Amino acid sequence: MEEVAMFKYEAHQRIENDTPLANIFNEAMKAILVLRMVSAPDVRQYAEQNESRIKELAYSFYQFCMVEVYFHNVINVLLYWQKLAEKYNDEFKGNWRYYALSQRVDSINEFGSEDDNDYNKDGSINNEVSNDILSDYSIVYEMTNERSAFLDTRACMPHMMYFYSMLYAKSEFNVFEILEQASGKRIPSYRMDKNGNRVQNTRTDEQIMKVEDYWRNCSLLDALYSGVVACQALVMDVLDLDQQNDNKEFFKILPKRIQDILNLNVIRIDVSTIFHNANNHE
Image 1 (cartoon, rainbow, N blue to C red):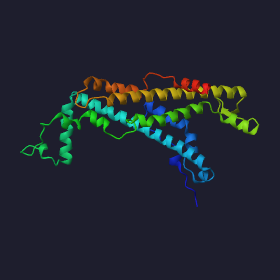
Image 2 (cartoon, one colour; image 1 turned 120 degrees about the horizontal axis):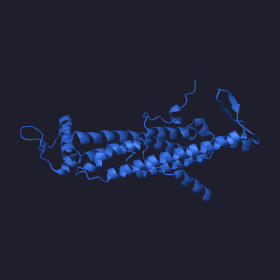
Image 3 (spheres, one colour; image 1 turned 90 degrees about the horizontal axis):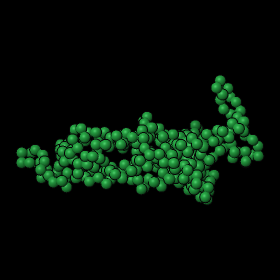
Image 4 (cartoon, rainbow, N blue to C red; image 1 turned 120 degrees about the vertical axis):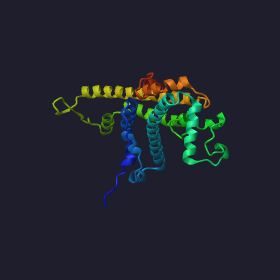
């Protein structure tokens, strides 16, 4: 009988978006693909491992899955918030009560209401309602009421820190060096030259490629961390908004602020150096 491969567990689901932030998320997930595949559920592999190793693999797999959920959620929520802010600014002129009243009317028209106070004697919808009632229809409520990995930054940070550490560890990992140490023999590596021919690398070639790979991974880590920090700062600002306030200045610049994050036009943080220094002090 043909064996069914568990491909959906072994690889991340690509984010179908072409913004620089989404590209960085996809690149980061691709960079730790081997680690994801090793930790993915596999009956035969788990049967050969002791309980401690199984728990370690399960923990790694869970962390990778949570980060994947977070990455997808970030892009979806940012795009949603951007459109919502544009609508709030253009159609509702940044007026929170106007927006909330409209949302309330749409909700009652679609789902009805069992509260008689929501209707006038002629059956029309009563719009003479308090701010407290309208709060649940405000734009701020709509942005923050979803159960979202993106909004729950505290819960997601342990997963992200694990992911950062794995990504940095990959920058210092060289499979050929490990194989050579284990076998006591040189393991040849190859590259394609400009004519498309397969050429064996010299030791100098390998050292150059190792350095290039290291800095490539460090650059990826810095861009990823900087983008996530900008996202977290935005979330904290949104959670601090008063639901019963127009927040005009905030929403006026929100579409551009989100676009800057999507374009990775954010403050660059050299986090790879922090990891490097921390490892050197251990």
